[in-house]
Each structure stands twice: as C-alpha cells, then as structure tokens.
Length: 378
Image 1: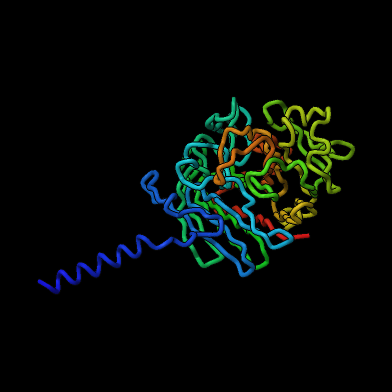
Image 2: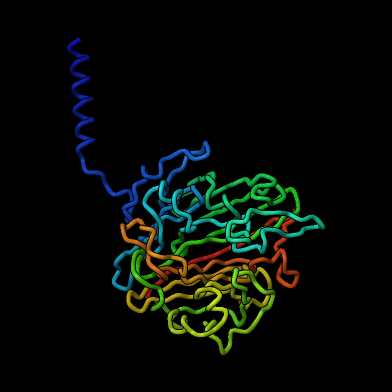
C-alpha cells in the first residue's frame, strides 16, 4: 500500500511540474496547434509546420489545405509572417476570404454558374451574384483533406471530390504537395485524375504582404508581371472573351511599377474591377513550360518574391474587398488593399469561351500544375 501511495505521489508531482513549466512556442509565428484540433465533417483537422535549412517556416492545416503562416526574413534577417490568416480553426470556418487556401474545382469565375460539356449542360452553385466562384459554396477551400507530413520540408494532401459535387461531373482525385525547399521556395505540385469528362482549374490563394501581415497597404510594393496581354471583364468580373494588350494602359506591369501608382486611373477595367483583379496572359513560348510569371519587391524590408509556373495565366488581385472588418492572427484588422494574391491558373470562364485554352480533363489524362513562390532579399 505504501508503494502505491508513493508511486501516485511521484506521478502527481511529475504532472504538476509539466503543467507549470512554460510551453515552448509551437512555431516562430506563435500559432498553437491545439487551436486547430477539431473534427469537421467526421475528419480530424490539424496543423503541421514545415522548415528549411535557412530558417524559413510555414504552417499549414488540412482544412482547405491552407497556408496559415509563412515566416521569411528581411534584409536585416528579421523574420515576419507575410501571409494573412487566423490563429484558430473556428475563424477559418466563420470567415470566407479564402486566406491561404487551395482553390477548386475551378479557380476564379464561371458565368451564370453553368457550362456545356460534350452537349450536356452542367449547373453549378451560384455563390458570387449570378456566377460561380472558386468551386462553389463548399469548394476545396472548405473541405478536410487527407494530409501526410513526408519530411520536415514536405506535406502531401489528397482529396476525392465525388461525382456531382457542387455540380461538377466526374469523381475527381486530387493530390497536392507543398514543399518548403532549401532554395527558399514554397513549391506546389498538383495532380488530378477523373472518371468522367470534367473541367478543372486548380490554384492557390495566399494573401501576401511583404511588409508583414497586419500592415496597412501593398500599394507601395513594386510589381512585375510577365504578360503583354490580359483578359478584360464585365462588371461581374466575367471575361468578355477579348485578349488585349497591356501596353499604354494602367494594366502594364512589364516594367516593375508600384502597385498604387495608377490604381485610381480613369480606365474602365480598373473601375469595373474595383482596382486590380484581373487575369494576365503570360508570355509563354510553349504550353506547360515553366516561366517567371511575376515578381514583388518591398523596398523598405528588402523582401523579394518571384512567382514561377507552367500555367498559361496569373490572376493579380489587389485586396480590393478587404474592408477592415476581419481581424487576423496578430489581432489587427485587415484593411483595404492590405494584401495581394498572385494565383497561377487557366483563364476565368474558359468552359464558356472557346477561344480560351481548354480546361477539360478526360478519363485517362492527368492534370498537372506547378507553382513556385520563391523568396529572397535585395
């Protein structure tokens, strides 16, 4: 009996020591993994951390395959989190700005929420006025992916989208690999297969601010986009079907230019888009070849980001719908135009625009897509 009491006393003492000991930060961004410990749709949600040899760090969750934080250094070696987001899973469920999310089945918009494929009309969820946006009411940003941490640098996501999900035909199996390489790249590799003809346009939706998340503006960042043409839209942000030159317009970023320099110009595409929210046609000599799509530079911090892809286009979105009502992980409200997105993609509404590159995926084919966000300092 004395032995039992002694053992119980020792175990209780050990427990008290552990409970009183200060907890080490879960990661450099201070994100608590327990705040992501939740079961959604019968599947366990969690948070994992990726690192590289240079001290870069990224946290990701399998809810929407979202990037929650991304810590990169400035020219003085000071680290900052450069992506918008939340520090708990409940806020990701409550708010819907697509922070850090995987987007599918179809990134961007499909007019009137419908398309015709092989003579059959498919009706999709209308979640953006009369149009379909980013995969619908419950796109890939709001499902729980299967997640496997491969190593300290790499995590692999898998999701099977059922035939008819959000109105799309075919059972679609998607694999995505996120890797934080020792070359300071956040690399995304996509693969997908289907059992019926379908349309597909996967992309990634991190909101970047090279000053650090929670700061006021991205209008003083310097942007380059490797595109001589873009696709203008109507007031619903649906492409008209035209492909027009950027030369001589405020859309021209073929020379690095401050984002805010021409943002208030009296130019119809900017007025209709409430600022920059446009699909740029990349200068790509051959389909599916990797090109430098865009660069972003912050003269103040020296942070510099390159975007590389084998997709034919990139969407530049300047945070026009951020309005200061959403409070992020640092406890600061995200104001108007305080982040930008650079989404590598096919063109919006391609299923309804025969002159745009096809987004049809057939059985026996494999969809592939590579996107790289590479970080440096100047």
